[in-house]
Image 1: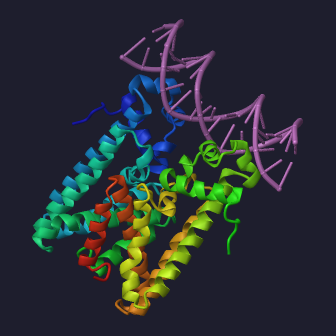
Image 2 (image 1 turned 180 degrees about the horizontal axis):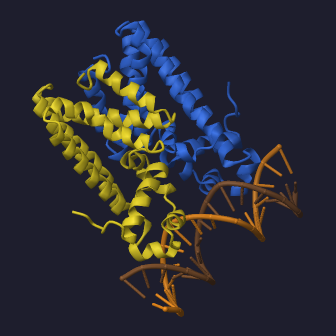
Image 3 (image 1 turned 90 degrees about the vertical axis):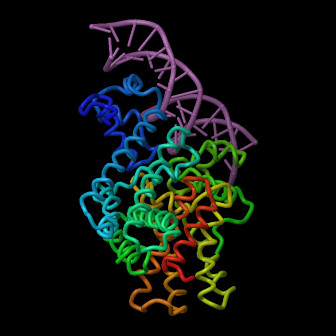
Length: 191
Length: 191
DNA sequence: ACCTGAACACCGTTCAAGT
DNA sequence: ACCTGAACACCGTTCAAGT
């Protein structure tokens, strides 16, 4: 389940790199800054990861794995699928609460052109996980034409990611809340 | 109206920088690459712009000015506000059509933490222009509770930007079209 | 196994010097 | 006015050398 023992050097690197990438993206992920934060030299990072691309791929993989676990927990915690749907935007809100950070996968989607292949795959996996979860919960809720659940799941994911992006651009978490509420009023999300 | 004469060196720099920033963001905007594309040396860029921040601010300002003009033309071209609304997503689709590029303002919203103050202001102006246009056209169409037009305008802008971001992450313009169509079916955009 | 200093080829930026 | 070569302090990365 865990790829690195909690508290190990590799683990500390991944955790710090995740936070940095959520604030500055793949391009802004600085090996030298990262090393300083972990308390080692830049060259030592390469003892744990073969390259920046490898590190970022590990970071992105762990990111979607953790996200999948959070969504799973959310679905089992609230027996009512409608409540799960209602709480879905909270997973994106949490990033903004943490110093206006954003979803690593959204940031890296923007950086598509400069993304190594191995990172791209893990970034897309995050989207897959979110859409699959939404599709399942939408199906259980039965509020959408069965033939449209997947399309609606994609739409919700894209819209929530967009709300987070625009709110980050203003460092305004209240704007995120207002956007989600507008989605509900418009009928994109269940009220 | 125009800040640089068309065809001048400054103009060529801004045009090339805009395309580069739409593909690689502010951080990925390389002065050396840019100079090479324009056919001068990197140091020469600084004869036209005091710094990378100044150049990026000029780029972002021109970007929202051009965008405002395009939206104005769209509104006057189609007398029916519902038709204007229907065509609004096309303005975001065009970036994807151009080698999977994205909205400069969306990319830079992600880069919020690393954005110089002068650039931030112009980036936010783009959002303001889009929301104001949507608010006006939504009002004319009269399809939304008058007290909710501004909130709905924000929601549409955020959702369309999100659709572009997610479609770029897959280099899949058909996904953008599907997302916009889903927004219409869900009721966020008029059918 | 884990870390490091020194080096490599880059980057944005500055500046004195050219035309 | 416009451009440039050379330099500055950075960057990701490599590697031989340390423990």
